[in-house]
Image 1 (spheres, helix red, strand yellow):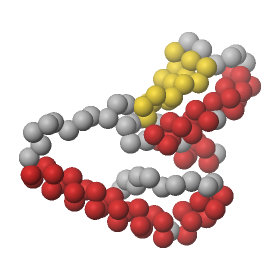
Image 2: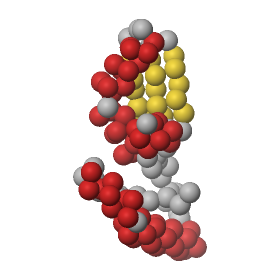
Image 3: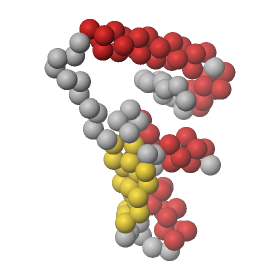
Image 4: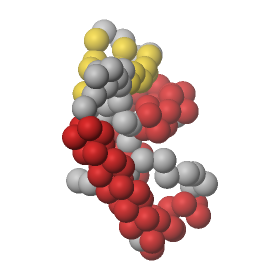
Length: 116
């Protein structure tokens, strides 16, 4: 259940074509894509048990969009403000007792935080 709510439910799309299930994640969800890849064998065995046929699990990630070369000062200032906000959100996340408990069980590094 935890894997579903922490990884599967956050996929941008889940597409089933024939004997293949593809989880697609946005550009900033690299860790979630990696979780699917790390648990691929388990997911495939669960699909075999529940569906009675062999299924291949894949995970993809959207390519990030590069900023235009002529980015103006206001866009740069907006990006700096967004980075400051992300740093603030990361500090809030690290201070959360639930996050601290999860990091004790699953050794990981928080690289990016999004406000939901």
